[in-house]
Length: 485
Image (cartoon, rainbow, N blue to C red; front, side, top):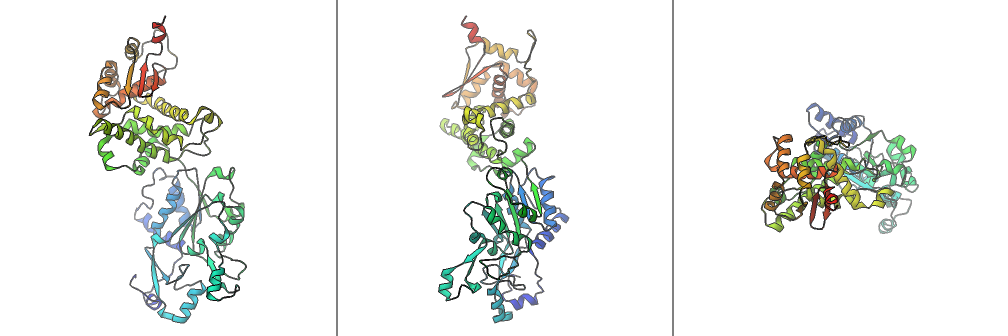
């Protein structure tokens, strides 16, 4: 079809015009029949968001994706482009992608009237049929709909009464395309009103011109529920004109969250070859986000983006990589103490409530890490009860005694691998706990889990943990008091 260059050739080919909503619907039907996943790479929405989105497309609806930050709303909208036909014909030179068989602009109609079947046509690829606008308070009707262009009027020596002096805005120029407006509530109410006719009747009005352009468009809006009360709102008549509102959500499990993070994290091949990441480290990283979404210090209405885990994972890898470079190690394994490097990724991604601001972003980030460790610890080792009988024996007694009889234990952040392992090997009770509770552990994960035990006991008040400039110290919480008597 791309070899067709004129309107006459297009007619002879038997080409039939199709609206963009029909394109999306027909191609989705084919994908569903052939078991093709249209939204490849979107995880955790298989039984919730994606079926609702597919139903909206089959219903030829304009769509509003409503959800908190970092829930793949914009990515879903961009992936709808894959449901468009690969190429469509347009009248060559048209500003608004006129269909040669159904022209709507004055330019296209006059050109076809003048040249008939010799009217030149070009082919528009589906990748070019996507337009996106971030709704900001400074957006005007002229930006998105259009306005009279006095410079064009002067150059063409036209009266302002001539519709050829119109400069089309983003929406008319996106005719026969998917048009996305991100953060719709941030759009001023009077601008939202300008969308009424486009959504319902499919036409536009510019500066009082008696102009009707039946635009063929697929609208996708994104919005954050927080915006309905804090910054703005979607005016009711506009909501009424949007066919389907689909609620997005965060991952429901650590497994899904891990899959998203590993897919999205931007890592250098050198990092992947140099740094080994234990599965437990990946789980702790994701658990931090889960803890943040439940924290009393964080504004849950703002949400905790999946980008927190993604950037934290990148920082975690870089922390281990930096240590390996400093020590001249060709390979290394992520340590629990490396998680101190993810704190900058957390502090910039969460909105703190008043209590959180009082405690400080660093304190809150560190608390989230400790809470994640405390939550996951009983899944790997026996649970430590908050209240125990005075003479009750526990699996951790030998380890606690080791610290009670010692002077403390220090792990430096920049210890090389040999030193790090030898220090942990010096604590013999750790070997017994690993053997009892993680007998099938991957040998590469052993030292991470040894450190995990120390951090876990610190969270349950069996040990004290102190972070100093060069590293972390673990001590018996009561031994210092007794020795001082």
